Length: 263
Image (tube, rainbow, N blue to C red):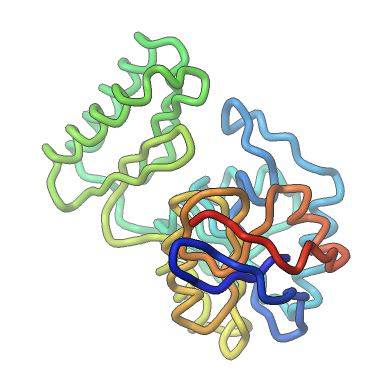
């Protein structure tokens, strides 16, 4: 893995990072552990991923959690019988290491009206996909990138009408409307206050703009933040793609020790 330090206008590798026994692992899902698919339901999961997560969970004394925009139920459906600590919907719901559930309060009545409106919009525009997560609504345009501007204007306009109780979260070919006040960084901090995470070095691996909150939190805790793929980021380390993440976690596979990356 390639660690980088901030220099004017560039990032330069200064060494290598190898997994340690005192780490607490936090993983995004899409774009980090699995490649992004045309639709959320279409992800192709490496058959050995489940075994890898079990091994890391055991090695870290239970200090491993998934930090995702998906719902907890969705994540659990991909790992039958494996109920890892996890935060779903960008922290709106969370399951701690003891299995206790924490959820944001249910959306208000206007949110239900918006839900119906967006469902109708998706029906009228082929390629748009509404993902109803219960506490949040995600409008995907992966199959219709030409509708990106329309989707962003629509969701931001709705948020403006709803007010500060709700916020907009952008991602890779998706824009989401969700209750304000929770993000991936806050979810990581919640875990780090609790056993078995407390006292360990947090390591968060993610690929998207939604993960920048997690990177910032982990940096503030003197942990290791890892960006998957290209793009501007607050992360201090970088891996190129999902296969490299899995190879590094399995084998500590080294990467070139000196590169120059555009910020």
